[in-house]
Length: 602
Image (cartoon, rainbow, N blue to C red; front, side, top):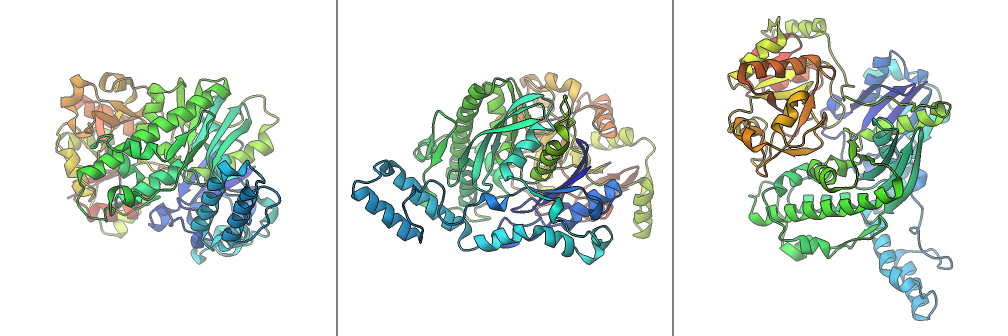
């Protein structure tokens, strides 16, 4: 049974195809359209579906849309209540925000519903937040989502009609899946565990912003949720905007900036973020400009106050989530934790949970942001329909992320000849490329199936030697990135503990580890200012030619580590096709492009 998963409600639009508990294909729409994150997360873009990513998934399976058995969409429009938010007591009539608040105030002043006194401010915040988030667009937003089956059937681009035409009615095949359930399913079902606690942390879903679950066998049970307006993801977004970055996009830059600061403003965040003992938390509304003045604008210089704000935010996030997972551990009777949601891409926070939290084992969905909900929604429906009869866990572990498009040597050489691009064939890709890297040159590396998720992990990467400290600055210049941004290492799995303290298997760049002091001078380019590195470990089964390249580099230099950053430039998604790779290569100061068995040099 083919299950097609779709994420499209907000951003990071994506598609995934699963069959019989196994992933067939998964990709983000941005890789095909060159629009970062596919689109912005605004209500009037909810109609935009990831047609190119869907087309790729269907093509990989050799099927058409009409052949799909179920379609799982990772947002449930019926999960957003019409009218007033949950929690307004019976007996208070519907009406405008002001009318509802006046009625509540009257009830309290007359001595009725005394329990409302403590909750009045919460209701007021909920109403105001609902107005701010949807602001009159909610009907359009929800209708776009409800009409998604018809849009998929009839709205596909003309050049993709081959796999979409004559699909017939999709209504009976369509399943709307709760957003945080889709996140949770993406975390638990492809994890290596048969039982695990699950936490989901993002900006928002229908109502939930944080979710707690228990996965066991083929069951995933929800324990509790934190709901809007209280959101750790949206708190981080607010400060991302204040610091002059693009929210719902640049939060990882705030995390990097935090390493240069001090916890000067922890007290400010503590005054508005209140974490309880039962997994719940609240966040008071606040205006950062009342604390620190006018926010930084894009391209303004960074000052110490910006570093300190980012650092303080990061520390408060870490200690809050530590408290949340501590509560979840008391409810779960397991030492395994699975994580998803955009906040789970915060690799510094993840390392704090690993080192200071109660769980012994942690697995984070590598496509933890909204793109991963396409996979989670598909797996959720697949398990519901087909997994109940299995005594073993129905789904297969996700030990790599290489679920995107690939191109054969024949296809690539045909393109190079057609474009009259000079090239040479390599007869020992790993050995010849390692020699180039040992000369301190920067290469673009294009091999095999593209990665699913935000990280380049050896299929669409920029690679360089970590031996010289100035390589970090060179790469930031090549990619037109901010100077404070670190670059990350890939290391042979078997050598990781020798170079990074406490390092185990970490194939997805989702945790940081301290660089061993005795090794720091050998790999200065990948050691961040705080002494850590966001590592990727690699073994031969995951990506043979990538592994062999690092092994050959070790043979030449004694260092089993390379710099690995994403194959793209500022504002562009990671490259997907050979055309993308060649265009990026010729418009950037790389020294060479290794594309399958071929090399392009300048």
